[in-house]
Image (cartoon, rainbow, N blue to C red):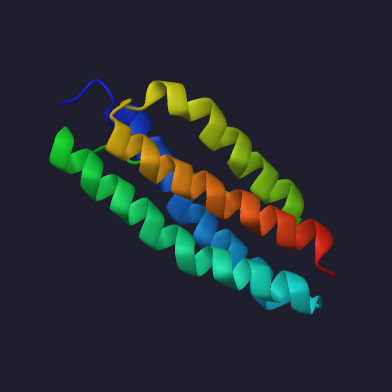
Length: 122
């Protein structure tokens, strides 16, 4: 088992879970801009997280021991800011292969783009 397995499992889990949480927010918002931004995010993040997981597993090992506890959120900007901070913090605990880092950059870009839309496109 890879020394990165626990961090990789946490990273992928949080990203997949963020799709579910933002999907609920997407359905509940009364803001068209939020609705569209969140819809774009949850559609994109699953594919991005899946790409990262498959690249990681190709380079290292099958990810095991996914966390089992998750929560729901109600404030999209606050929630995605927390996801952004999580991604920024966990990067140092993930493998530093350039191809994996490029995929993490794409994930960070998706989060930043969504935060922009949520904050400034009303």
